[in-house]
Length: 376
Length: 85
Ligand code: SF4
Ligand code: SF4
Image (tube, rainbow over all chains, first blue to last red; front, top):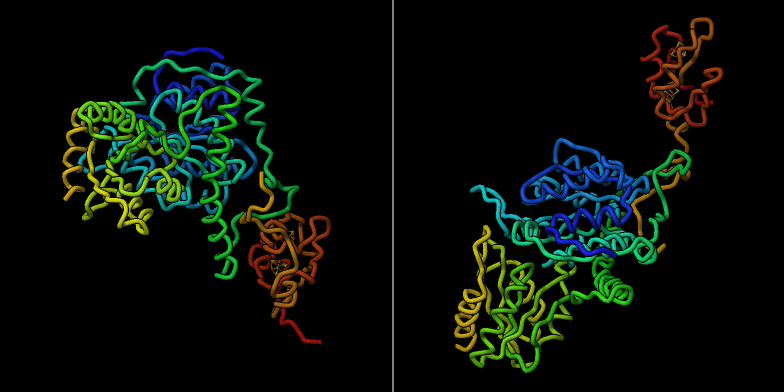
């Protein structure tokens, strides 16, 4: 184990190096670029034993790692914003193909107008592709989540996306700890697929189906995405036993004692929210923070279990569902809590779009406004 | 890994429509005196029905598509009507 002082992108690249990845294909895009560069440098310097394919686009990056995964390699790519949108077709392909790809998506606003800063529109637009999506809020959490992602992806054969906010996390320097090679081997043994495309294997991959074959595949994918939630928590617990490091389960819960206002958000906003909760608590407002770590599968039952009867959920979305009140988290929360609509009041807003600065004081102001709304 | 996971992979089994040789309405006939052994037919045959060694055609799988006859530069393969015996 060594202590590193580095950026979120460095933490990401180091985790990929340490995870014994076989194949990486990536196309540079702000604010992900340093990930693609650092991994290429590790391989060029001989400190990482992997193949790196410099591709001409994100669509090719996703296609290349999907193909490499099908021949049995442990694979990785990283992207952001438009790059992720360009991969969209292959995201479906990989999830349907049950290929355990791992990708880092450095959350960035989508065009137009052009904008380079933190925003979750890129990731939430991929909600229905069948990928597991995790959100990390610190460089340590990025490093640890990449290792966890490979373990989860390979066990349940579903691709995993690790999200972290562009610039706010990707370019922020923070101390983090790596993990010793022997401990990584214990946690993440070499990938051992049950099949791989090979002339001697004699099978084919992704044949044409009619509805009677297609339906069981789709049903099994949605079932397995759902049960991946428990697997994520189990793998996080195993990681905690091994390293003592814990970032939360489905949620990173802050000051839930006697809370009646739960402030739900994702990514770096969820960490800043802890300071907003402190400000509100100082005024005697019983607030708590819920930083969602597992966006897909959305933990409906677990969210409900965190909220006692008579409490209020205040949702902060860093994305928009156009024409609706706010974003995807508000919709998911309302759907999750529909059966308890007489017990739990919900309000939601979209903030922080395009990297809009979100100091704790502003989040506390927004929370106070929503508290007035739910009290009506 | 959980071995119960439904994977979109296929293993060769006898096709739902029977062996492809039963589809044939035309049959390729090879004139070995014209053949120079270039193996173009072997490369193109979608059913891998042509032998690499002697260009012998396996009529259990030859579906009579005629690709071999079109691709053969020496015109050593001609297609004749399949007769029902
Ligand atoms: S393509 Fe024609 S010439 Fe070439 S091997 Fe086949 S039959 Fe013979
Ligand atoms: S007719 Fe078609 S299937 Fe039969 S040997 Fe020629 S190319 Fe192959």
